[in-house]
Image 1 (cartoon, one colour):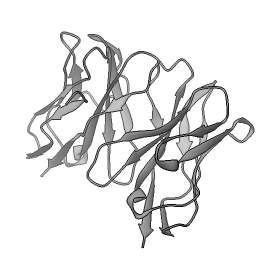
Image 2: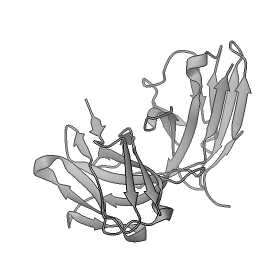
Image 3: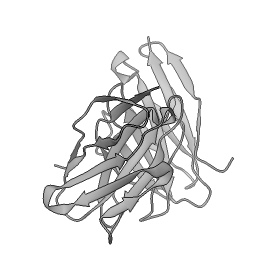
Image 4: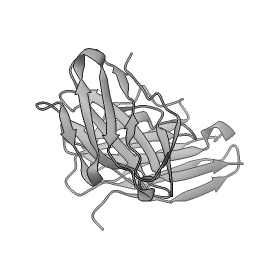
Amino acid sequence: AQSVSQHNHHVILSEAASLELGCNYSYGGTVNLFWYVQYPGQHLQLLLKYFSGDPLVKGIKGFEAEFIKSKFSFNLRKPSVQWSDTAEYFCAVNALSGNTPLVFGKGTRLSVIA
Amino acid sequence: DTGVSQNPRHKITKRGQNVTFRCDPISEHNRLYWYRQTLGQGPEFLTYFQNEAQLEKSRLLSDRFSAERPKGSFSTLEIQRTEQGDSAMYLCASSRPGQTGFFGPGTRLTVL
């Protein structure tokens, strides 16, 4: 069965600290990978995506993620977080064709404190 | 606003009542998806349409749940005989085939 695991339920960081959120997936085939962000009171927004090519993907707001096929992982990183990065982060996967629904992880809540 | 819209944004109902939610996708997006999100969980896929055809509905949570997209534009999700366990955020997303979906703001359902 397809599944996505996000290792951290809640992460608390101080401003300027570096961030890495883990994501591992289980999927029977080649995949597309996504990170979505949900700011408090707002709807899900795409942060970045990997379809093919360079496994290091850069997204909005200084986020990046690295696809490591051998580890079935797609970890999200940011070198220096800001208070405004406080949000819930969801990793998701679907089939390479893009014609299947997204399977989401449970999410990681990030709290950035001043 | 050219994004995905959902109405109502909040719905409070009593157990046993029927509720219907509406989703208006981004214009010209022929794919439309419904997800459910409960507290502490990621969105869980329910069903999706390509134009007016419902391509997958086996993930609907029970036969109390049904969805339509009669003219291939907006969609409705109906829950009959609501139960307290149906309380959740119901999300809609739309896309072109093979492209990334855009999510709406969701409808928060509370069943008393």
